[in-house]
Length: 621
Image (tube, rainbow, N blue to C red; front, side):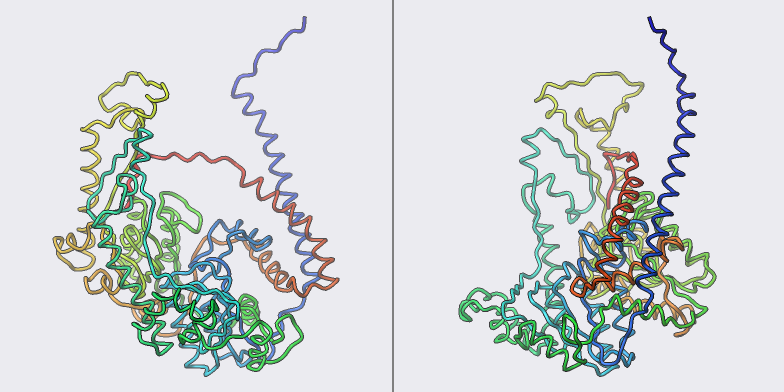
């Protein structure tokens, strides 16, 4: 009979695990460093030439994927996306704007070429930022701006229409649909499942949770949505009209009658829109390229004309970087839903964004701050954390100006309201000043499947958040009282920040959403303008004139990661799939297993399990 050893105490098991963990971590780190060094070596051997930029070059502005104010994910995830690409590509607005601005007086750039085909999504407010940049480029440089496209959605068309001419493919598909707000409503379905939805809110226009308590959109939600959407649609149509010299009503008629007009054009969309005056020329790829070559220079490449993509152009500019100025204006991006704690880019973390604002406050070279807000709202607590840091910057004697992007509503407005000045595009959606809380209980659902709950507690409040029993009236009163308090705090803070009466704020709040022009009339924002207007205002308030550099404060890569990303960006610019030489093919074969190893290493690291505690009474704005 074999004698069994007694079970080891729990503490001894833990202590015996620690050395093994340290060994595994050391091996992980060593392998990662070796892979990175090898990748660097190969990149530097094969790609030691800088990008060549000749005269008569066309600068191609071709946004890829989603246009965002800040790339999403952690710094390491951004690094891996640079290596292997992403299923959900993103393009930073700042990169587009910088490339356009830098090309204005660059004698090597002869023409700006807009390519909207692979721009998946962009907000109208961001399009207005691009509009201002391209208009400035055109006026100051006297260089042509040409758009060439194969197919276009509504927002892609607005981007293309910023050019002097739009050249469309003969087989193109193009469609306008206006703006709409449609959602699924779940009340009947939840009732059948036995789910009880408990919604606590202030404001009849606070409609975010309506789908869980209704089967249709409320009259208040319809009224509010149509009010701001009609204004935003008018902004879109006015932008098209001003560049096409076509009456807005005529454009509306074209859009409303797309089906009959297409039938009259025998199904040829390009011809239909050319007849309507919405595009200028119809050419296939060969003739489009030949046309651009006449504005730049012919070259033996896949396009047939000398060109440089905007991301490669930015790399070239980085090589030629001028001396940094002493004064800085820091731009901090608050983009996405506002959540508690630390969050990766793409969402706003109460802790994370507060830390970035604090960094700007403590940096002596930073003379002013611009907070770029593009958020529909989120956590009350996180919003207040961020707003306190905004106030701390003001107390420190530094100006802080808000630039609102596509949307700055609810919590997005909360973090903006006490800044020195608020700018918003005429296409910005803002307001939604209100608060709601919601959670669900499932006692009937559990009964249907024969599950019962029983137990004891030391007070009548024990198990108040349990989802397996009915919500008590007392607890419902407690939650509603807290929501009411939060709403009063919100409208009182808005009144103090904006110099308005509390009762007046209450009439324009109650969860209602406004366009920026409507918000300006109501006193919720100060000026219609873009990011550059906010920067100029901040510089003026800091008394630094034009003598400043703009820096973007965000979670950064390490110095090694920055060097790695720079090398990879340069390598990827050389690895054009249409220009693969034997040397490049050999490089790809060599790098492929290294990239796969890096993916495995990073995925293994990301695979660590993190617990996330969710409160069912999570109060949202």
